[in-house]
Structures are given as structure tokens and as C-alpha cells.
Length: 350
Image 1 (cartoon, rainbow, N blue to C red):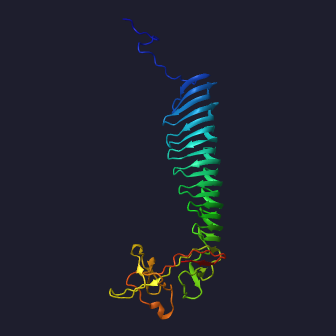
Image 2: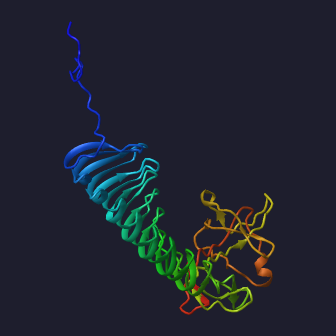
Image 3: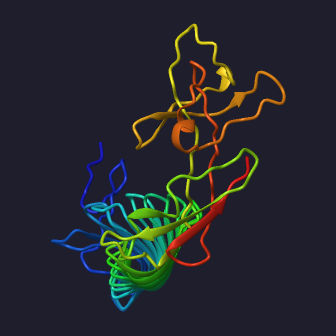
């Protein structure tokens, strides 16, 4: 049996360890002593230079271009502790220039970076799939930018440290639009709101609310109106603030008017019968501030040619007995818009 002497390779093959000194030139592998680095790639003059991959003990890595031993140029860096990955330009080990950051928590960023943070112009998609495109500073939305929110709202305007501040336009998914000043992510300053309901307001806003918001409606004219079936009518109102002044900054309110016949419960044997209730279309009784209820439409006449009652009557005529079940003359909903602030004029046909 032949003995294995020094320098004689064993039958299972030799195992080559990384060199104790970095390679001078060319391609090679080197593990830095007393550190967590392992480099495999190109060398020049004993330094990492060219394309290579640097692996850290915690699983983080960089793969890309090196210049004179430094991470500089195009490459890809993954941080194991956060799960984030950046692909793009590097300078002295930090993302610098332009690139794409993919976040483990969800979302991504593509744009300009400086010292590893979003800086300049970029495109950000967050974990909720909301999209922002515009200016960044110190890793935050800062400057002019556009944002599409997950509820469908769209904002185009100024930002300060991740909050809407300055001038901007918000177009809501329901059709409402606000144009004006912002502060700390809410309407603040001069601005106009065109609400989807038809209400418009132009004036001062404080902490997201109109400074001169109407809180009540005053009806102008007589308290009692006679309205014959088939005839138009009009109602004038004023929008008032808490202290009684007219809310001049607001217009376009929708006024809902309900009118009906007073509900009277008759005995089962009553012979009074002007109308018959349409039982297939009964509605809830209308509550009034006058101590009685009104019966909503629709109703039908038992015989052709029978005249309908008036929606409102004066004196004793208002107490004419009605059928024992629900009955009302419904004037429906009146939708009107005032041409001048603080008032409203509308009409309805029935």
C-alpha cells in the first residue's frame, strides 16, 4: 500500500480555500477575515473593480458594478433585515441617481434617489395600491404632485412633507370637486366646493369646514298656500347661519317639499269616501310639526271626474274627514337652485 505523502492529492480530491490575500487582477473569490463579507467577481490592483457580487452574513447582498473597491455604478442591492430591494444607480455604497425600489410590505417606487432616499421626481405605488406621481424630498411627498386614492378620489396640487398643503384640486369619486387652499391635509383658506348634490360654496374654509356654512333654512312668504292639483307653485327660502345672517357664500341647495292630506282615522262604518287608497304603494306617514300626520301618495279616484282636494286649506276646510285609511296629495320632491347666493327658488308640477 502506498502512503500518502505531503503534497500528494487524496483520493477524494483537494478542497481549495479562498486565498488569504485578495487577488491582484482578473476574476476571483475572497472572504474577508474577521468580517461578514464574501466577494466574488473582478479584481484590479487588489481591489474589487468591475462586475461582482458581495454577500453579507445576514443574507443581504449587492450584485453589480464596483469601482476601486467601492459599490459604484449600476447594480442591485437587497437588504435582508427589511426585505426591500433596490435596482439602479449607486455611489459609494448608497442608492444615488435613478432606480426602482421594491418594498417587502407592498408597493414600489421608481424615480430619483439621493443617499438611499426618495428625492426629486418619482412614481410611488403604496401597499394599498394608491398611486402618487410628483416631487419628493427627504423620502416624503413634497412639492407639486398627483395622487390617486384607493376610494377613487384624485388630487392634483401642492404637498408638504406627505400632506396636502398649498393650492390643490380634489376631484372626488362621487363627482364633487374642491379647488383652493389646503393645510395639514384638509381644506383651509379660500376655496370653492361644487358638491355632487348641487350645493356650491365659495369662501373661507377652516379645518376642512366652511366658515360661513348655512345651518338652517328660512321660508319666505305666507305660512299657508293653496295649491290646486295640476298647478305649479314656487317657494322662496333663505340660507341662514347660526347667528341669523344670510349665508352668501353658498347656493344650489336642494329643497325637498312634501305636502299631503291630513291623516284622519275614521270608524269602520263611515260612509265618507272621496278617494281609495292604492294599497300596493302605501308609504310611511309624513311627520309634521303641526301635531298631525299626512298620508303619502299614490292614491286613485273611485270614479272619473271627481275633483281632488287642495294640498292646504284655510279654516274649517282643513278638517274635512277623510277615508279611514292612508290618504295624501303628494306634491313630490321639489328640486330648485338659486341664481343668487343665500336664496332658493323652485317649482313642481303634479
